[in-house]
Image (tube, rainbow, N blue to C red; front, side):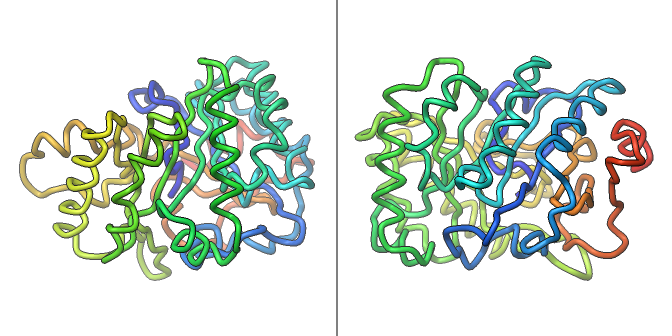
Length: 310
């Protein structure tokens, strides 16, 4: 998931550059999701070549050479205590430059940083929940108590964040496990969140670009059922399919046109990781490799580096 529900609603119709960042998690993430996209790409346990200021420099130098539509912090987990200084620099840089910013978080440290997030005012705060009940969620995240902690953070965020920040819950639809998401709209209504974004489970492929896991028609059928549950509960429902993995061969129907979001410029997405390597567009659906271009903040201007990626 290149941007995995992180983009503010109004950015999806933009053709500007989208900068996404994976930042260090010292000691690793506090959860252990078996389908973690960062683990699949080999973005975990990288040498931390980049400092917090380097990420801010990257944004400043890129925007000096081209329009930037959004800046997104993807993870590893941006609200970990030792990681948040990186998140703060990226969000503050975007705010200073008047670029919409956003983050994706597992929500377990959300309560700790709500005061800071109110000041930094990201355009979107996406919090991931992959089941409507604690047992299933905590089993998938391999952390007892994660569901309760995240839910408390969501309640507080819904009560205190300003209208400048879209609060969204994101969920991954796993094959044959749609039922664990059926109760999500009711849960969201109870805690005061009215936006829900679902993404089909993605698999990174070494020999080709990856994409959604499972049978396409079954995935779409499950998504339609979830849309029905959301509409019944008054919850705004969207499906993120950034790189067209669920695209139909024929004419798209009403559901595909109105509920599934895709990037206009799929080659305009860049993903920078802690050792300076940077992937572009659909290459994000493949693992990092020795051939992945690497930005060196000491010797390269980020705007020139991005132009060199094509």
